[in-house]
Structure formats: structure tokens, C-alpha cells
Image 1 (cartoon, helix red, strand yellow):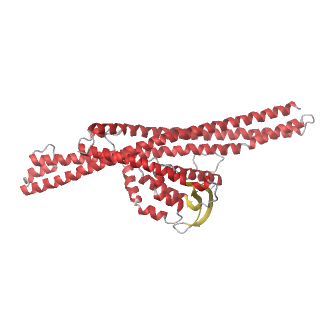
Image 2 (tube, rainbow, N blue to C red):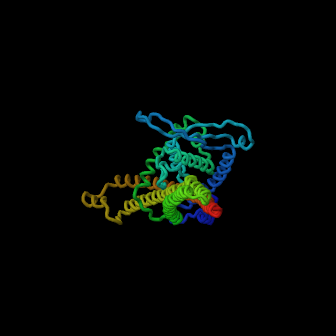
Image 3 (spheres, rainbow, N blue to C red):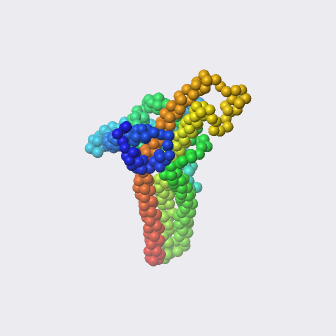
Length: 453
């Protein structure tokens, strides 16, 4: 019929992990094969898109080199202070070739980054969209400011925004989005382009559906497992960040106590003649060690931000799983409605009611409907059944589209996560080892000072 055999369908379903496909008994073999052909074509186009994306990243170099505090009036004409971030983009060939090429530069507010990400979430529901850095500081130890205008926090957010742009610009699908390109290169007009897509209307409807309480009868086990994994990942990283805050607070205290050592040794050296020089030198080493804690904990915040990114990545992963549940739920609802319509047609054709119905009760009370009324209702049911079958096929295609694309992107994300977290944890370990070596060196120097007394 379509040139695709039943075994081909089975192989394709196994490859895409479509465990629920066989349960859609109301979908004909023709529709199944059409879905297979559609996905084979989509796979080829996806490979082409990935090649184009890689070429795009070879042509463009993106950075967020600085942040600037500004003052202006907001939407309600009130004075406010806000932060803007400079985005620079230039041809990668000029950078690699060492040529002096002025970059395209523009300023964006954090809220504009949020608008971009919301657009990406709606436009690409099957993608684990990279998260933005936190809007307000969380999991901070007591000596750090939680103010979102604090210079240190703004700097860390600048690094996070640059990382966000690098991730979306290197994604094999998102990198080709024209709204993203306008965001990076066009100072004006990109918001109008976003609104023209009509994504805001889709945001409202999808959010209402996602927040509604629904239960899928036949959930896909792979997405269910991935959803549970995202919950556990978020929980574990949250615990790790809380633990790091407690350690940072205690570490700060330990280092500052060494400052007390320095003060006491200096005071002691003032009353000693033979021992004075050694005590004073040891005190200087302790003071230097005490003051180094600020740089150490600032470096720790960098690794904490890397963990926070995957804390928010877990939510993005969970969102993809929820969208799959929504697609499955809509398909099951369409199947139930189609089954109901077919049952009504059978009852109307045979004159036998399988279940209690309001129509059957009214017929007993007020008499049977005329032949013309029966034919008209039967004709209407036939039209509704045709529409229902088309809806089921469309919902099936939507679910399969989301399932295959989402699963592929989840595997890409899994590899990225393993590489990033392995590198971050190894670097964090090296930092801790260096910190311990500095402590040993301080006390070794102090020992030499004491030996010379």
C-alpha cells in the first residue's frame, strides 16, 4: 500500500522505544506506515539540520563580556535600577584567523533572556532547553549577599547567561532558529518577531493543560523512569548545595580563627627578644592564610553555579516528560471519544442500547424518534466518526513526533551531563586539594619560623 512492510514498522517502533504503539488498535495499517515514512523523512532532515547547526557555530563566536547597571523608568512610569548585559557576536573565521573584526554588539536585560527561553520552550517542546542562571541568589552562605544587584552576583549571572547562549547556539536544532539569530544580532525588532510567532497564546493553553490534574492510563515506561530520575537528580543536587553552604560557613570560621593566631603571635613577639622574630613571621603566615579564604570561597561559588545549572536542567528534563504525558493524555481522550461515537452509531443502527443513557430514558417517556430524525443523527455521527479518526491519527503523529525527538534529545543531554559534571567535580576536587596544600604550607612555614627561635 505504502511500500513499507509490517516488519519494517516493528523494527522502527523498537528503535524509537514506542512501547505503547501496538495498543492503538483503532489506527489502521495505512496510518502506521505513514507515520513510519514521516519519521524516516524527519530523521534525514534532522541530520541535515545538525550539519547546518555545526556549520553555523563555526561561523559565529558569541560572548557576554560585561554587565552594566542602568536607571530608567519601567512600564508604570516609575524609576527603577536594572542590569543590562552586553552580547557580542562576530564571525568565527575572523577570530581564528587573527583578523581585527569589530563585533556586532547589543545590550539585553535579563527579562529578554527569559522571553527568549520561554519562546524556545513552547516552540521546541521535545528539547531539554538549557536553563537560565538564577534570578535571585539561592543556596548562599551567610557572608554572601542575596541581593540581585550585588556586583559579585551580577558577575556570576553574566557568566551564566553567556553559558546559556553558548548552549542554545550549539544545539543541533535550536541553533537554526531565526528568533535566536535575531536575539544575538539585531538590536531592534526581535521582540516583534517573537510575538508574530504567536507563542504566547500557546504558552497559556499548554500551561493550563500541564497544570491540570490528569492521569495517563498507558504511560510510556521510559519517560516515566526519566521523570523519576529528574526528581531524584534535583533532590540530590539540592542536598549537595545545602551541604556545601554549611561547609563554606564552617570553613570561613576556621580560616578566620587563623587570623586570631596571627594576632596572638604578633602580640607575643612584642614581649620576647630571642623569640620575637620567629613569632612575628609565623603571625604573618597566619594572617595571609586567613585572608585567602575570600578568594577560595569565591572560586567555590563558580563550581556551585555549575551544580545549580543542572539543578535547573532537572526541571527542564521533567518538563519534557510532562509534555509527553500531555500528548499521551490527549491521544487517549481522542480514542475514548471515538469509541463512544462508534458505540452510539452501533446502538442507533441496531436499536439496542448497551448502557443506560439519557437518550434511552427520553425515548421511553416521549416515544421513539422519527425515521428522518434517526437518519439525520446517524449522518451526524458518521461525520463525527470521520473527524474523530482524523483526530486520532493526528494525535498519534503528534505523540510519535514528540516521543522520538524527545528521546533523542534526552540521550544527547545525558552525554552532556556526564561530561560537564565529571569535569566540574574533578576541578572542585583539585581546588580542595590545593587548598589543603596551602594549609600544610602555612604550618610548615610556621614550623620553620619556630625552629629559628
